[in-house]
Amino acid sequence: QVHLVESGGGLVQPGGSLRLSCAAPRMITSVFNPETMGWYRQAPGKERELIARIDSNRKTDYVESVKGRFTVSRDNANKKVYLQLNDLQPEDTAVYYCNTVPVKRPWGQGTQVTVSS
Image (cartoon, rainbow, N blue to C red):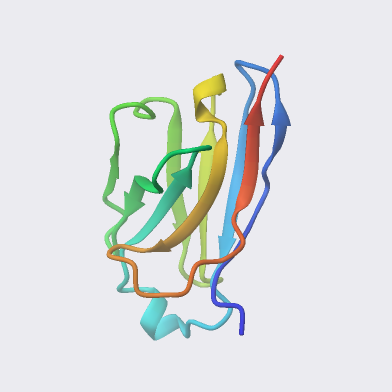
């Protein structure tokens, strides 16, 4: 019973880019579309934190540490959320997750992003 599926992570050098995807196969469109969706990340030894969100009107919000480098978007027809990560830095190394804001669904497996030279 997979609720959220994240993909697109990998190992990149500082300054590199990645595009993360999140699919919500168990959410029907009429449930997905009104939800505010968010990207969260959990770095080693730290708490999971919300870093970006997009509401049903596509209004976006970011934590200061990723503002100007990350871009969240959504595809309502396909029940997907994306996170474009640019100018990645070692401190961005974490497992990245998507979920509703506030959290209403079981967590997926996440996708690992590692930034290292």
